[in-house]
Image 1: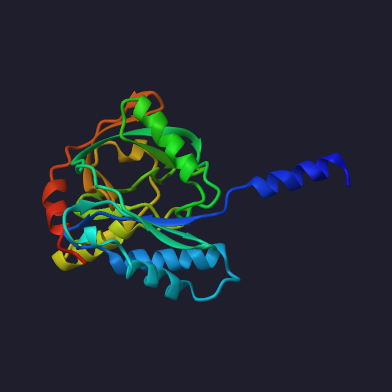
Image 2: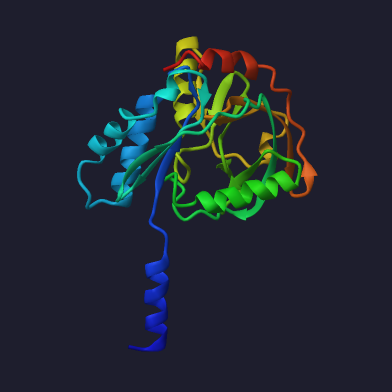
Amino acid sequence: MMPGERRRSVEAAAAPEPVVVTSWRHVDGWWPGRLHHLERTVAAAARTWPGVPDWAEKVVAATHEMPAELAEGEWFPRLEVRTTGVTVLLRPAPPRRPASRLWTLPGADPRTAPEVKGPDLAVLADARRTALGRGADDAVLLSSAGHVLEAAHGTLAWWEGEVLTTPPAAGRLPSVTELRLRELAARRGVRTASAHRTPQELAGHELWLLSALHGISGVTAWEHGGRPLVLAAPGRALAWNTALDEVP
């Protein structure tokens, strides 16, 4: 065996086991978007470990054994899937953030598996830490073409006139909050669409940051390329977020 081969084998043995996760805000026993979360998690597990059977059974079984504490109060559980099993971590939920500030991560999206939540958690955490150091709450990720994909810990949505718009689904994490928001829009007779947009093209629009933890958070500031983008006031965010709480 060559020395380089031995070194690579040791590094491979030390590599952490892949993980697929999902998190949500759990309020007094209420899990918004439960079915969407489970479907996304099962699909991601099957994609990550295609040779392992019965992911749906394993994931659903774990949710039936969640801690009794979830029946009261506000929590931020995290369901973690590994080949060794499925676990639920119980964490208290922080206060909701009704308004958010953004910062654009320079360069193209650094993730290796953007459509699965789990493999790139460390990369996303680093991006958000950098954003916090710039006075922002989250980091915006761009495609190689410079189009907005999503934030490190949330999905972006904006208004083009009376049309609620998000980036195309390809190349980003399927958002449970976005699915619920589209259901709410359909109930209200509001049109939805998807479109490629650069940060500069979103200047002047009402912009929202969507997440399972905070729901709809109106974006009030965005630093892009060292300069602020001027956005419209997120005047519709609060009312829509209140209505979103009622969407299963």
